[in-house]
Structure formats: structure tokens, C-alpha cells
Image 1: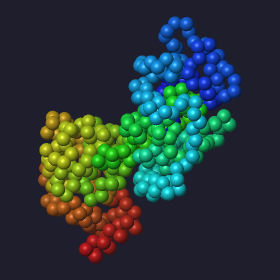
Image 2: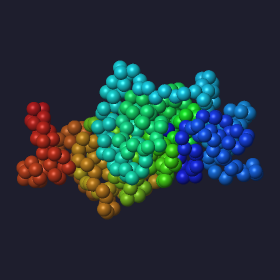
Image 3: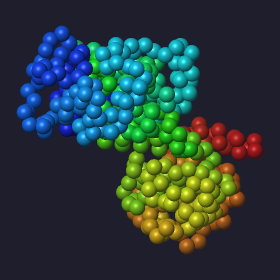
Length: 411
């Protein structure tokens, strides 16, 4: 949810800060008592917390732009909050959105949550020994999922904020990591006093976006903790899992498309670092994920697959019969390891060896659907008609295979 603390961003005061600007007397209020801030006399401050307090003094007290003391994204967020006539001392209400809006958000998020459930569970397991909460918001900042973490005795904001239906948008609760991602579409961290409102300055959060095949923001993944900094690189963790979830969502949306998995190293195929592309019935590239956009020309989407990969639809379909990756020299000059599969077909196999494309291949079917049907029937024939063995080889359940065969008979 709120701010992500980078490893260097340590030392923000615990509790609710009620004073706002850094006082010249060297004291600030934390809750109902004063805590001394032993700042060095020289103009170079030793910790991120001290630099942030100096930035607040310059911005809120002196009207100066605190460039170099906090990130540019935080400064711009403070400016937006100030332009909205919000005061840092204002009380923030973490009330859920209306029942109708919450229901709409939950309904729209259901397919995404189902697609990324495995990644969410893995992330929550990874963070089980920490004080972090995992949250997922929709594209407007409304929480649609929150992990069940251990209740912390000193947590004041988290119990109110980390609830499904609460709106974390910048307009609602000021500067915070998921709210800034909603506004800018860029991953960010917000730590301690970088939050605009004083009452949430005990929070540390890191957030990253999830996008659909058209590049539109569909969700924001956030890690948040209160009154204690992250003991690890939260920005790196949230970025890695957001990428994995985005890839999962893209694949889930790629029905009846040919999925291309490729990278400059075969070792990262099947990981969040792999490049993904989808080719449709028309032989054109329909979408690329972030890693693929780094390997291919900017205008690849919408172009013929042959212009991007040196193989047309039929050649790419032929590769799908071979689970191991093939070495391809792209028209742009880069050499990659590539494998293809129908998005509704078998799961990819982690590569173990470098394999060249076969010298000869059976003539591929004219459409993706026909190729899918032929692949199922060929596998079943190879297994002597044994449904269980064919299902294991295809990587699907027997029930799914039975339904596929019944649908083919009806067709």
C-alpha cells in the first residue's frame, strides 16, 4: 500500500507524526511526545529520514523545491496534493468506497485474481516472516486483495488502510506508492515522511504496475509495512512479482493465439524474465510483454510475424511440436532461443538443451484451431488411445481432455 522503503531509506520515526515541517528547534512530534532529532551541523544529512525532513521544511515552510533530497516523483505528488488544497495536517479517512463501486471493482478483478492466484500465494509465503502486507488494487486504486498478516501491536494505520474496498488513490490519501503508480503508471517507493499527510508517515510501501496486452494499467501490486523499514529490497521484490503476474495475465488473455516465448538466454525461459509475444490467425504480432519490447523494434506490434522473427505463422506453428527451444537469428541481428505453443495448449517445459529447428516438418494446419486439434489427436494416437497418458503428456487434466475431444466430435 503505502510507501516502499529502499534499503537506504531507514530511520523514519515510528508512530503518527503530527507536526508536518521539520522544526528548527531540532524536535518533531511523534504521537503526543517530542523526540530529538540530532542532525549534523553541516548541510549534508546522514540518513534518508533526515534528508526527507529537510525536504519537508524547504517545501512546506519555505516554499522551495527540495530537488535532490527526495525523488522527483514524490515532489510532483506533493505539488498535486498542495494544488488540491490539502493540508499535511489533515486527517485521512480510510473509508471503503461505496458498496456499488466495491462490487464493480471485485467483479472486474475476479478474472485477474484467478489468473495470478499462484503468484500471490507464493509472494505471501515469501513474506510470511516479515511484517509486510501484500495488496493488489484495481486501476483506480481500490484494494481488491490484501494478505492476512500478523497483527502488529504498534500498527495504527495498517488495520484501517489494508482492507478490501479502501481507496488508495492519491486524491484520497495523498502521496503513497500505489496511488502514485495509478497516477503515473510507473513503479515507485514511498517511505516514511515522503508521505504527504503526517498521520501516515509511519508507513513504508513499494508498488509496481500490471498492464494488459494493450499496455493499459489493470492493477497495482503493493507491499506495505508500518513503523519499521523493509529489511530487503522491496522495490526489487514487488517488481519481480508484478512482472510474473503481468505475464500470467497476458497468457490467460491469449486464447486462440500462438504464444512465443524467447530470450537471449535459454536459462530464463519459463521465468518472469522471459520475453512473450502473441501471434494471431492473421499472422501478425498482437502484443508483446515488457521483456519482448526490449528485444524487438518499437513498431513490432501489428507487423507480420515473419518481419519480427524471420518465420511466418506456419513456420512458428511447426516449432510448437518441439518443446525444447530453437535457436533463431532475428531479422534485427539478435540471436534468441525461441519456442512456441498454443495459449490453450500444453504448459512450457523448462529448457535443458539447445535444439535447432527440425530440417523437415509436417505441413502445419491452416489455422491455430486446426493445429490445436491435430496436436491433441496426434498425442492421443501416440499414447495408444490412453486418455490418462495423453493428458499427462499434454500437461492438462483428463477432464479437460475429455471435454476437448467431445467438442471436436460435435464440431
